[in-house]
Image (cartoon, rainbow, N blue to C red; front, top):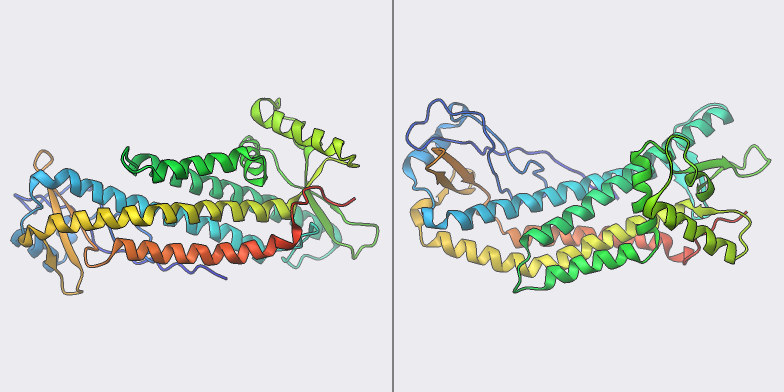
Length: 361
């Protein structure tokens, strides 16, 4: 299923408290709490703001200075969650494009859907589509899980160990030696200019199509640089495992590994929101309790949105906080439900494959 994204940029201007003129173009935080608004911040000169927004800055007080630290933490928390959803959307977009452009089966048969003429052209396009999409999926999956880890590190605390448990979970998954680790390591190879997937004719018949695999012998012998470090050891260990099983070649299943990698990344995403949601609820309650004691700091605009702002006396700049009418916890819970649905769909694709890593001859 598709993950449609609607871009809807809301106004989040900067304004000088003492003068509304001559505002510089600067970073401006926005907390929209909505997954269909992909911009986490927007910069605008006050001269370009609406009369209503100008009136807001003139007639409402900033959040009390003693609460600035808490307000900034709230802004950064929302922005970080917006960034997480953006990276998740990019990851799923890459995965969906892979399935749109390539017909692939769990027996590692692959063929492009581009409609090329002639078997040689079909082969070239299949190789290109497979390698481009594989690199994109692995890279965007790595970026997503690393963002979750950095969020947990930054927003966790010594009192609540839930985020520490999440970090341990991701580390254990990486150390388990499955597709999440193998493809995660191969990402480094792709960054050095190495194509990851080998594509070859499935048989003598011209209608047999093509097979795809991760050929460990080829991956261990890149032309442009010397293989070394953890990746070299990992690939050598996999080859030893295959030799112990008396495998006739060192080809690792392409389709099963890629699908399992996607399931593993979605599993990390599921665990992240499962961990974060209770913590987010507490922090949201704390922040809204804080601003409830300063009623002249929060305005309701004509579109029913609620907004407040922080005033930075040193920079003489105002930092708006929007989206206060929405529940951060509820919006993130909706995202979690979306991720769980995608996880279940992807997981069902590989259940029949079990744990077969070596492609048939």
